[in-house]
Image 1 (tube, one colour):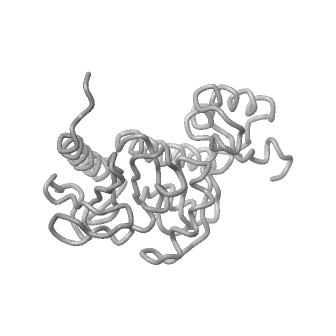
Image 2: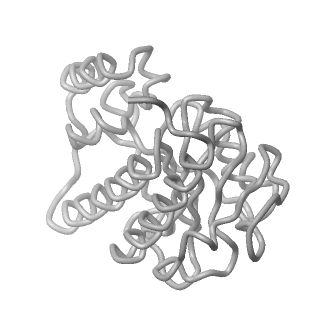
Length: 237
């Protein structure tokens, strides 16, 4: 099958962004004008949702085009106020072509309570995401936020941001969206577990076996495949 022409690729990406934005709203991962979705095009330009627009009713013609530096090129309205955060993800991860930022309520609640999801507890999550780190609080829409997440996105596909939300990365908007769903699903399971008993990380050998499976899909060391070894591996709480 021949590759898509630039115009066709952009049109396809616009529709994917709209579809993912609606899914985020339908799943309760964003409300009102919260959240943003972007796609990096083959020429390096970036499509991104506009600021202050209801994501459940977004249309393809409302998605804005910016250059690789975040400068506005085309479309109605203003680019998302979190553009710098999206650009930081693309700068740190050449393999990533889409970024989703949302406010998954249970996962954000964990950051408010000071509880980390960066523990190896669920086998499926270890294989698909590794651990889920939390970036220290930084004021949203400022340069402080992208700087706070840079070190985390280098080796992770999902990062929580204290008191703010989560950012997930993918090869396309759907992969990034599915990872956002998984972040919230993990938080919900962890919440239930904490209500009924104590959450215990998987034993070291089991975690390493799961990371080997993950490594076969992605390659590289544990740090480069999205896991910094939780307490089960390091012996720390």
